[in-house]
Structures are given as C-alpha cells and as structure tokens.
Length: 416
Image (tube, rainbow, N blue to C red):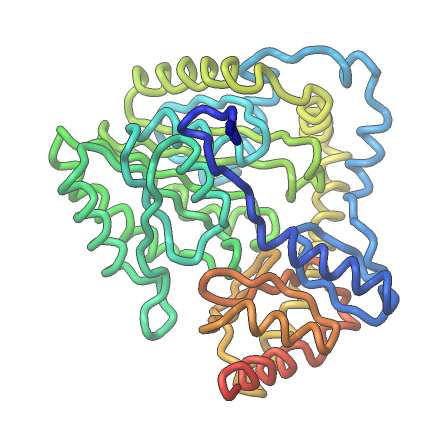
C-alpha cells in the first residue's frame, strides 16, 4: 500500500517545535484559569505590561499612513534601493567597517540565514554554531542537505569558550575546503549573552589563521536579529569595526531583521548585508542571492521596506521611533534584572544574561522541569540543554518569584 507520495529526500519530515508546543499549553491554561493567573514565558515577541502584543507607536502610525500602492505593489527582487542603502547604514551605525558592501532584501532574518547556508556552504558540508542556539538553524541546514555542528559556547567561568570554538573550526576545515560559521550576537537567542570586543578579536584571529591557507574559504554569518534590544546602538556595534580589511577568502554576512527592531514579526522583512575586501566577491554576493530570492520567494514585502525608509529619512520620525523602541528595551531590561537578581539570591545558576528577549537556565531534564513549572502555572520552553524564559513577554508584576520556583522545580526533578 502506498503511504507516501513525497520525494525520497522529503519522506519523514515533520516540524516538532518545542516553542509552539509550550505556547499551546500556556494558552490552554489561560482559558482554564484566566490569563491573570498564568505566566506565559514562551512568547518570542514583546508583550506590554497588560500582556498585549506591543507595536512601536511610530511604526503603527507610519504603516497606516502609507499609500495603498506602496503596500500592494511588487518590489524589486533585490529590494527597494533606498531600503538596501538604509539597512546597511542601520546595521553598522557609527561602526561601519572598511570594505565593499552589498545588501539583498530577504524574508526576515530567517531568509538571510537560508540564503547564506545555500550559497556559502556545499551540499553535505558541516555548518558551525554554538551549542546553545535557535532551533531552526538545524532545520535550515537539514533542509539544504547540510549538517549542523556546535562548539561549547561557555567555558567553566561562563566566558566565551574560544578554545572550543577554535578546536571545532580547525577540525571542520581539516575535512572541508570551506566553513560557514553562524554567530548570534548581541543579545543571543536563547541565552541573552553578547560577545565582547575581545571575544570578537579572538574569533576573527582564529578565522584569519585558517584563511592564511588561500585554498580555504571562511564565511561568518552574524545574526543580529536582537541588536536593537542589546543597549546603546553605537556601543553594541563597536565590534563591527574589526571586520575591516579581512582576508579575501573571508566573507562577512550580517542578517538584518525588522521583526524585533520594528515589531513587525509577521511582515517577514529583513536583509542580508555582505562585506568583503574584494569588490568582485561583493558583486557576486548581490547576484547569487538575488537569484536565490527569485527561486525561493521572488520578492518580499514592499510596504514594510517603505515603512523603514520613511522613518529613516525623516529626522523627527526617527527620533520619536528610537525613543519609543528604547522604552521597550528598558522595559525588557527591568524584567530581566528582577530574574537575574533573584537567581543570584536563591542560587539558581542561570547563564550570563547581557540583554535581549530571552534568558536560559541549564537543566539535565528540561522537559520535566517545564512540566513541573506548570504546577505553578508558569510556562517556559524546554530546549535541548535547558529552560528558556522569554522575559520579553512577562509583565514586570509577574517576574517576582519565577527564579525561585524554577530552582524548586529543578530540585524536584533532580530528587525524583
């Protein structure tokens, strides 16, 4: 009996998403007990202190003011030229490195990651990221017939583990002629960690050492999806200056997203920015990624691109927009501060949080810990290595006590 019509490479594919599963459990509990009694720490979007999905007010105002033609018309495959210029400026701010640049519009930051995996790694290759990582990285690699490997993000002192990073880079390049490395910083999902300038110096030194072999190719994909909630915009971007004058066989790609920075999650608008010391390599970057866009989604959301350029080109709107976004950053920061302070007080060993939407706690059995937290009507996301708490979604009034309850849940599971 025929039970599948799928091609051989697609048989058995199923997306089991722990985040949406945990969110579903939270929604059921909310219907049963009332939303005021539950703590939903699963949502990867900003919820205000009334637990309503937040939108930056200037974004809403500008979007509603756009002419219909700017919302419904097709956009160029590479993106609107003014948008592409703007995302390069926004990505680097006052820390623009020296080199050649090109930008290609993508379907959110995920689209930038998809294109980079497809165009800058070989079929069957191993792609490298940290052991704490956003789950879809693995799905994106598998879908493209690549493998994802990881280095240990933290050493025993909870600093960036440059030794593990170097060991894995060296091992992969001993077997492959090229490597794609994905680094999500600042405000890493799911830990809230940010690499320091010294960390970046060490990372680039490892890559430059390998690049001395001109037969090797190194592509660094910097996923900056949460950068606008990582601190003062120029301070959080200072590390980017280190990307000047890298070897010609090193390509840097920055994955820009409007989802978080503009609270436009569902509009699926982003960009990939390529940086190289070679004009030819950047020209190739623009061409091949435009081609992949045409072969994947054709073009993206014109209205969202127009919104960004409208705000960016108006000094009054831009100042207002940045002030409103800063208020959301401070709101999330205050929530995380409560959790981290209480973690230190009760002895819960959370990972080092610098900024961003999420923080994480290592756990031997994350599913069991999250299940136990349900007894307290707290709903978090079980990851492979621990429990993720979405501080972006929890009202300040509900933050108190979560750390201690998480510790008690972990002790219960450990002693069970």
